[in-house]
Length: 393
Image 1 (spheres, rainbow, N blue to C red):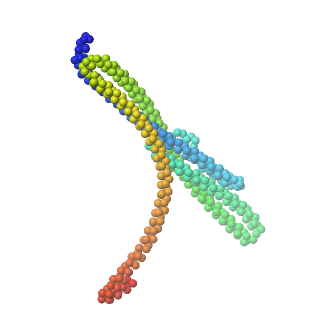
Image 2: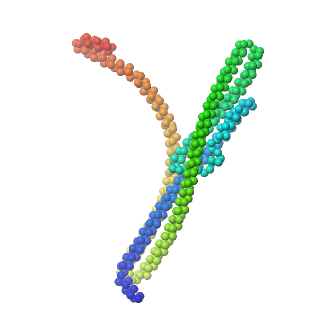
Image 3: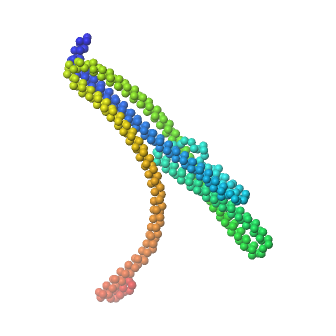
């Protein structure tokens, strides 16, 4: 039986070698497919990691905005207390009652400072965060103005009250002329007090409107944070899937390596018979092909490392681009102000030109008539020429 097998192997060495080559080629193709799948999975994972980092940066910027608002509210309260210090008891009491409502209606509460993300990319999130920070700064400024106006109004009321008492004391023992002067002073003080009250009420209405707008912005930010939580859950699932795929790829690679080693052992066993058939050169070529395949695997691995380095470089470039984008936004606001001023100056120039154009046209027509009249007078047609010259003059 062994003799017959040896005879068959000597008779059909080429067929067996072709089968081995086809098996090796199939294994090489399967290894290439697994490497490509691993490469795609790694790229997807890195992209999701970059998105998650961008959303985390946006969340941190929102937290900074919240801290800034809390600090601004604390400073505004301290400024209000400093402005009211030294007045009578009645005026500070009224001022504190008027200011109690804005302080108690703070937009960002500690319960709303939980973790929240932005969906749709990092640029839109940074734009929303900048809008929220601008609105918060405007609200803090308005609160400060309202507190200052309320303090002025309280001082004016206290001063009016004291002047009223002094006027009553003076009017008791003074003449009608002195009474009239004090009455005029009291009227002026009451008018000033009324103006201050109206201005404080107007600023208070603006502050309330800004607070409503900030509440809407906070609701939007909370929705974005919820979307970030969903994205995190999706990223976690993707990581689990990637780990499962990676373990599966590792298992397949181990199986392929084992099969390759078995195939090499089989080739070594049949080496003697194939040497007799004159296929040693082809075996060497097969071995070279296997070595080339291993080298390609190493090359693919090195390419993966290079791509990882490129991804890290692109991340740093993206951070620089974000910083330059913020600078460009600041420069854009300055450019818009300059453009507005230029448009105003051009409108003034256009109005001046439109006023001077009819006068210039009339002067040109008169000059032209005068020239034609002189030419006709010199040509012998004196009557028409004199008339045109007179009209042109």
